Amino acid sequence: SSKPVLFSGMQPSSDSLQLGNYIGALSQWTKMQEDYDAFFCVVNLHAITVPQDPAELVARTRRTAAQYIAAGIDPEKSTLFVQSQVPAHAELAWVLNTVTGFGEASRMTQFKDKSQKQGADAASVGLFTYPILMAADILLYRAESVPVGEDQRQHVELTRDLATRFNSRFGDTFVVPEAQIPKGTAKIYDLQEPTAKMSKSAETEAGLIKVLDPANVTKKKIMRAVTDADGEIRFDREAKPGVSNLLTIYSVLSGRTIDSVVDEYAGRGYGDLKKGLVEVVEESLAPVRNRTEELLADPAELDRLLAKAADRANEVANRTLTAVYDAIGL
Ligand code: ADP
Ligand code: NA
Image (tube, rainbow, N blue to C red; front, side):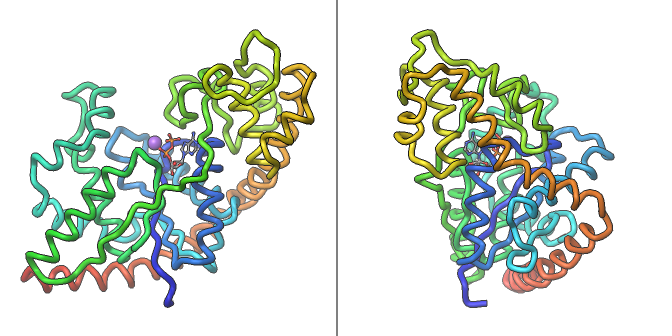
């Protein structure tokens, strides 16, 4: 294929994606798969950098893959695969470990955040070297474009540094990738704490719209979303973060401008806006939820799709790994 290569990954770290993942990542990727030779990876090797229940990890890996497909990632157009089914990820990560400075790795701020949450002694070395595995993920496919959230920018910078260093030490081997941080993409906030980003890893689920939650659960969460006391429906991120977040979600999912939504609800109560939003969210998420359930009902077929994608991923990844081994004398 002559299309530029794109790589992106998602951790199988929860039973369901949240609305922010759907808006900020999945629906972007669904559009991008037309213009790129896209590799989408369920990064289960990354997931085990923090403790996981084995049976749950198996289930979550399938559920994550099913949600990608249900949201529109087409296994005929994109290579949607599971990281552990491509051994070259772990092999290249080892090689990259040897060209990464200890100080350089120590400057990764995500490790500082995540290890603090776990307690310094509980954090694994795998959590520390996580960004190096991520560099391997990206470099194996010679990806030019890496669509990620702002929080991953530093890891893509590290990937660029490692690729450049390796190339100058051992000869031109890697494509130096670029982070593609979607500019126009709306950021979705927690319904209960509308100044914090909606996140799978939020401490409580009350403010989280989960893609696979039943309609009545999502409805309850939206109806209980935090707003404010002035009672006026208008967009003001600073003064009215709760209402602004509801308007943003409404606008993104309905494809309407925020102004047109504000106009429709002008002079009405927050309850009306929330009821409208319940419908808009259900209309967007119901097909994804239903399709995910269908896919999960036939795990053999899902596994077959993933195995086929892993074959293609292995082919591409092994070509790069062979070049790397040749370059360094292995
Ligand atoms: P989470 O915080 O739920 O674990 P991740 O950090 O795994 O999410 O993010 C995966 C992708 O989803 C990233 O590309 C990120 O930009 C997007 N994303 C996550 N949360 C949001 C959000 N609240 N609003 C918009 N995009 C989001
Ligand atoms: Na995360």
